[in-house]
Length: 323
Image (tube, rainbow, N blue to C red; front, side, top):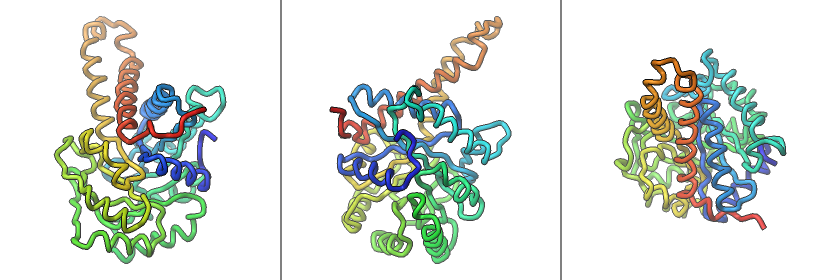
């Protein structure tokens, strides 16, 4: 049960996380090396805390205008090829009992999937997926509800579905418009669509270039969770939060936490600095200095370090331990 694609199995894992006061990490990927970094982070955390089958969500967008991750996976820029390549890579790394990361339970997720542009991912891609974010935020509100409800009616028995009712803030792009009656509107949206999770506007900024500047709306998250009676909120734009802000998310009813930008940026910066340190060897033609492996390994190691720390902030140490 290492790679999860069955809805019922995923529900059990999420229920267990919630009961142990854990926000599940959704780490996005746009490359094979970032995918392995996610598995390394989870495996390292599990070994240090003696956790059996530690769960983590590996996600990617398809053609999302702000960051089309599936398109970035291969030089062909073909999102279908990139999507399948990542999914098969996950299987190779953790599905068999002798695979290096077999102790990591992977839930796969299609992020920011547009109902029209990303139809392939939302339909043909379902055999690979545990959950999808049905992203109708840019459509008129009534159309959003109608499309989301119809998708769940047709495919909700196959995958867990995240819904979103409003336009989230994106650095250099759209700006969220929050209403005073947000809790009431969100409750009605969930009731009308029957989504499993709500991607809520909690004041964060996606694709953020800063950390700790955004005002996270903690009280809104708590009020909404109280109204819903259970944790079912998903947080996007986590890269803009500092460690103290991330550390309290399980208390606020945030059941899934989406993060990528900060990890990719800081891992890339670290690997680039190590590359610069090797510049003399590169100019001299030293193979190990010039070949891309060391840059990628540095990137992987730094990304894994950041993600492992994040898992600690999300309460992963509270997971049931192996007996």
